Image 1 (cartoon, rainbow over the protein chains, first blue to last red):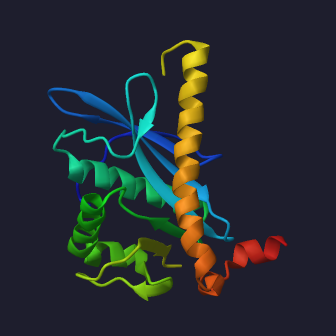
Image 2: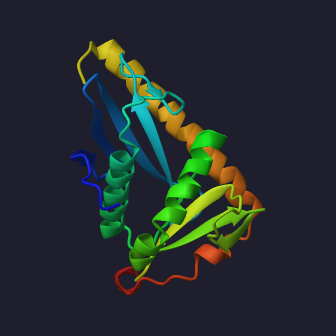
Amino acid sequence: MQEKPYPYTSTNKDFRYEFESTSDSKTVRKVVRITQTEVLNVYNLALFDILEGGTLSDISESRNKDLKTILATVFHIVKDFYTQKPGAYLLFRGSDSRRHRLYSIVIAREFNQLSERFVIHGLKNDVLCPFAQNSHFDFYVIEQKL
Amino acid sequence: MKGTRKELDRASANEEKLVQKKLDEANIVLRRMDVSVFENKVIPKQKNER
């Protein structure tokens, strides 16, 4: 997470953030949406690619080899979100099993740094549990330390 | 985003539909679980605003 993030724009009213993933070959627009769930104080985070024509996709692969930069950008977006919703819980998961496993690997790798600011949980069998490497979770859950 | 009004409207509708799909997936899990675990945190500032 020490990686320099991409600059992003935001509409804080509805927690919509946009940034561009860039490589020598192409630029891919990405959008992060954080939306309130049915449970008070619990929000869902989703990351999409904006395809040509403006439609969104959560399964496209941009292959820009900038995963670290993208995740660093999302990390900064999460921090921005928490400036406005400090007590919120944030749910997220990968759009497929490969991405979901990847998120687990990244959380485990960055756990010490993330833990300075956040408590990381996982939802397993509909129960909120502390995050543990090599455990499967249906969702990952972030809570900011107050 | 560049595009005609119709394209922009279609893109916006597509985005909302996809966001709602993601939200539905989260809500399905939340409905099954004891969500009181999310109620334990009290934010003093919010409490004072009530």
